[in-house]
Image (cartoon, rainbow, N blue to C red; front, top):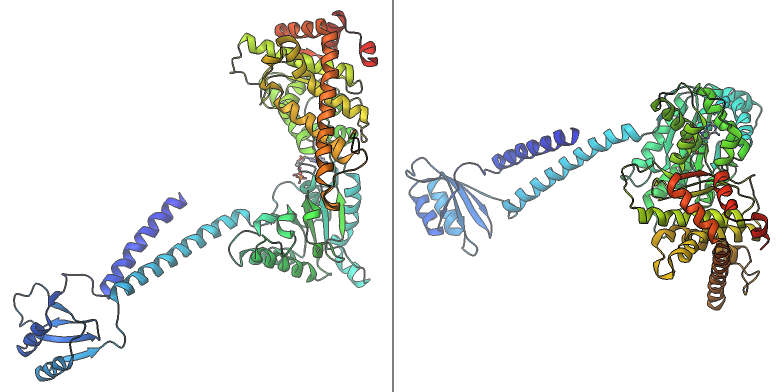
Length: 594
Ligand code: ADP
């Protein structure tokens, strides 16, 4: 609406201005009559000329008197270039006609064009300013509205919380600290992946201290018009100081605080960062303002930002551990008063959500509650939680998608291959579920649920991950033949290549390159080493593939039995899948030993 209105306003404004300019430059009314020079002299002598204006070397223009009857226009114009003006002067003097000279040759066309373009640019500028101003109302750091939060609203993140607890007292009584000469932290840097509760904690800090929280994103201050970033920063800090104390939360602070003087950096963004440093340094310590900056790339920050007295505290926030996941789930269930059925085991659910952030866990509870409402249930059951989990991790079930039987069978064989290889080679990750229900971008999936959180991966574990990942392709090859392998293994191969590269490039597990690692920061490796590393990666993948092919061939009956069961059931629990494979002759211990 605004854009349309502004557009119409612009057009109307332009028409008005063009009209005004036309009037001022005498461009309305009939066109001036064009005369020859001698004709003009004759008209002068005949007393038909009222006034004359000479633009030397260019043209003469003027007005006829009323005596010049029959003229199409009262104005005339004589184009001349070389004529001597003396005869004109003489004739004008004789006729008593005023004559004026323009000091410089005036190019009316050019003047007209210039006036119009300047006006246009001014109007555009005004329009953009208005649009920008209206956009900045949305993006400008504003005081966060919504419920006042406390540390009770944050589960886990204990390290970060204990740092924040210390700040609360300062925010509440900054003068006491200042009077004691205590140096107060001005900035706290929170480094961690998205959704791990950084914003939540900044808001909780403000809530605990009873001060407002202003939130902004680093990108609100960069990549905009010259001077706007600096102006916005000043306004933000002014607001915070005016509030008598505040928490300023700046998300993606690396956008604002990236290293200055980069080859492709913008001088304007450097200026904005300088202003930020000035604001940080300029705090009056007796006004409690604390800046919390969030990033997941602290290494990109300008070192000046991390100096003492600026962001001199830094907290790393990782993805929640299994027990933290359980606490986060419990907190959201409590806060939203979600009625849980007795069959919902939060410990198990937390284990099933390896790698999930706090935000994803909050989303999971929300999805589960929505499922329960849709199903007309009075409480959230394990089935709702399971469905919600699949949705959060894989996307919605693609109910409208029709898959022909041949493709379903192919997916069943592929997933059975993953399941079997995983059961045999990854004993630490029990099979949780196998399904050929298309969901999100996947046509099927075999889920494994790690028994406990691992922080250190052994070579055997990494090799197991590769074997499990190659199980799908190997199953296709065994059942359908080499010529009929499919695109279904695309993302599996990306994953297995990534793991193999990690083993060789970073972990010193390459067969021929051994302990040499590839670290661009400590200088490149020779091209020969590089190509040997690539060969090592290939070797890991190829020998793993041979191993998994051998295993699946040896247990082909179990593989096909699981695929058949999937064709009928579509989704099988881990226990059922294992039972089916064991009934078809899979002896896990035996296979694992082999
Ligand atoms: P970030 O700023 O790190 O990207 P947010 O603070 O915006 O993450 O987290 C988004 C949402 O996820 C929060 O509003 C909250 O509902 C949930 N959440 C994330 N971490 C936690 C946590 N540790 N405890 C409770 N809820 C959390």
